[in-house]
Image 1: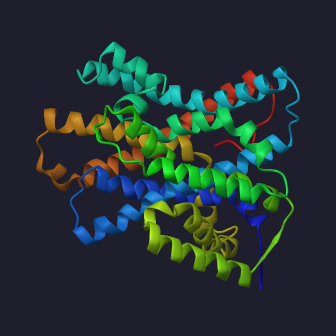
Image 2: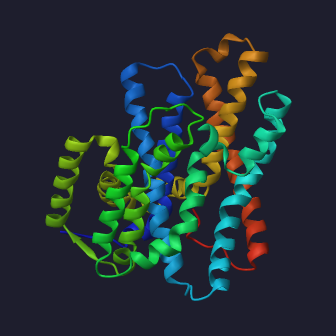
Length: 339
């Protein structure tokens, strides 16, 4: 029995949809929805969805970079322009209105809004769309990582980069406040290995390399051993491929069904749904306690349900609008490798 690594690309959108659901579930805990501690602990594992995003983003970046020969300054500028459009246009469509709302509610100053719209907010204050702040930085270094990770020794190089990132993320930092820039950098970089693994496995996905059960069993053993020694959350870059390995047959089995269509829908709006989820949640956390005292909002069940339903609807609308703007600016068809 073998596993074709090209499935990670073929079913990438559906996997992004699964990651979207996991993040929405995980955010219910951060939103302080009242639930048993055991259920909250279980929902917190949905945080792995972020690492799925990073892993699949690495694969998508490999496909994108392998189609482009970056041999000149113009080639690099063209690559960066496309990436900036694909991340910043949806981002600004969500955050410009939300910043205006936060300013009206007295939560943001003009300076706060500037930090937010520039994605510097996370690095300086540990708040906002930290995933976007990190992925923008990874976009900047992606062409250089790509050149380092396409040779026959790419896994050795990748291992060296991952070890360096793990050392960096474990350096003791005395000031772990939200305004500690070193702490914020360390928090984000601790999730970067998943992106490195995705970028490194890209060639194997494109070539349709077959992964045997023996190899997968060995990978599983290494993952479990590493998790015991280093801790579960420090080994997500190893656990994510195994999780997707398990989920792929289920995705393939559901092909054409409403489950497949739902996952594909959520996968296409994954970025926008992440952005609308955190912004709507932030607005309602301020708005409801201040202006609405109805008992129907007890436990934040209705409140978070509104965030999820309205967030998905807005994400769909914003995604369509963003795609029209992006296609117009780039004068090309939609890139399936959008993150």
